[in-house]
Image (cartoon, rainbow, N blue to C red; front, side):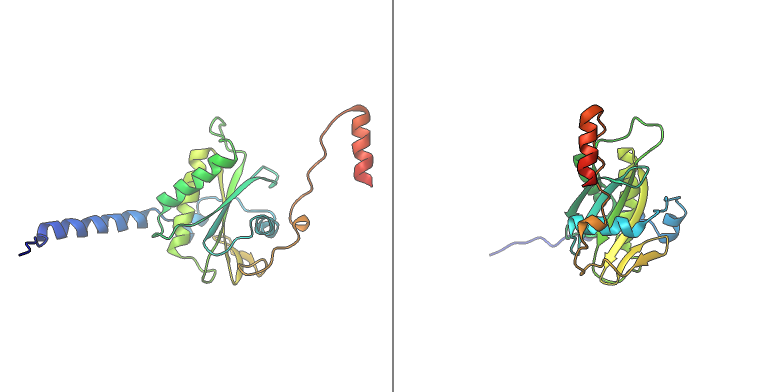
Length: 211
């Protein structure tokens, strides 16, 4: 003979309340496009160059996130890519994932009074370029991760089969897209400057570069 216990109504109500609270918290950890646009996110001078450079470097597929750090001249200083886990979209989880990648590739700027470097996020996903709740969670996560790493929060860019789109700005293009081949790396990445040295060594480097 087998004995079992049916869950009490109180337990069921408690579980339901917990799920509702978790869902409400998840919805709170996302930003609407209007909130993002009003947050004073700095505009990229040449977003296509940034997108093409990250696309060539990381070759993202759907569910790939690329976080990149730019200096004041919008030169790429560090970047990292990772695959989004199959779980409900939650800004807190996205924040932790982004912060982990930032800590891995570049030191924090928390000692500075004002941020001098900017973090941008490129997310490759299925669907079209219209805003989704998942995008809102990434926006929330990027903003919070930047605060905790001493960076300025930059653009959030989606990459879909339709092309790329800077959310909150209305700027975008058809190439690259989620299924396009990467462009030659040299066209999307600035050449590395020669080291500054003095004397004969500097002259040799200049002559080599001229060839």
